[in-house]
Length: 383
Figure 1 (cartoon, rainbow, N blue to C red):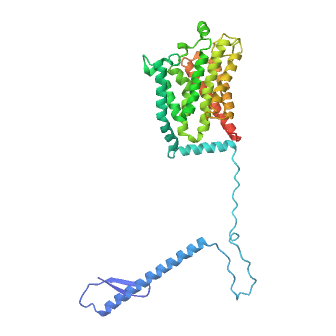
Figure 2: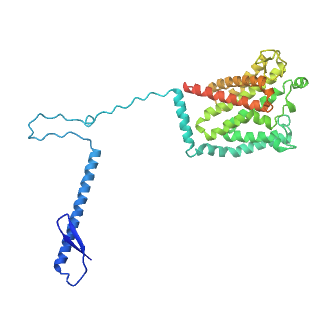
Figure 3: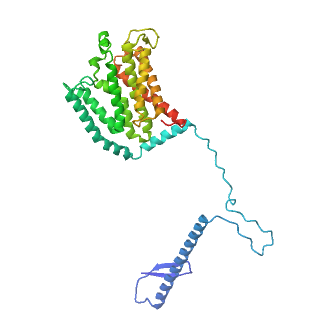
């Protein structure tokens, strides 16, 4: 046990003692008195803490106001001071408004940061709902075309190697586009395919006799499918990762297909009806079918082809009429870039095949359309 000796109200001495029969009533009274002193001291400390907390809360909630002077102070009364004027006013720094390019850069940074957040499930949910339709419709369409032989002149057949068949790769492309963009976006690519095949058939015998016709009678193989539509597939897939940029990606999608159709129309009509094809780099007349050659007839046909496909995308809900103009301009620029590459470097680089050139061509068309779309969007015009 311990013996506690009271010195004053705030100091208590504690020393040990051993219980013995000599512990009398006086020691018990001293122990009780010391315990009471401890309770009083603890209560006083708690009251002090409570008062301090109450004062802090009042000061943090209520603004400081001036108090009137005591009635016995013989000086002029002090005017009251408002809470707003009791503190010095801090001048906020003037921030200059962001330029359009700075706003665009800030938006892109925000989107990059947003990619670190959880993925938006709504586009993925919509894609999962479209996927069964994409597989079912595409399977039925390509299965029927294979059985009836209707696709034999459009796509390379399944046999002898299904993995290298144009039908197989077109089926995969069809599923991707329908899943990402729905049947309306899918229909734009279908229109490109049939118009491209139809233009290829124009005066095919004369072109075959001249040795400038497309190989396999114009039937598309895997290299043709992805060389023409890889960029469109990328734009479609990106709508799942960047759903807020769907209008811009849809514009790039339409522009890439419009570019390829413009190139096909320009090339096939130019070879069939071009009277004075010229090389784009030297402007000298060259034979029809020369890489990098352009003609008035082919150029006009290319412009019409891009206009038809872009206009079809309007009721499909992908772009508006402003987007049609942007897609046509992008297709015209990209086709001239392709002609320049064909006239300068294509023949000197082994791996720069027609399919690679087509991929570059459609990518340039999509990028140019996206840049023009951003510029048009900065001035407040929707695409």
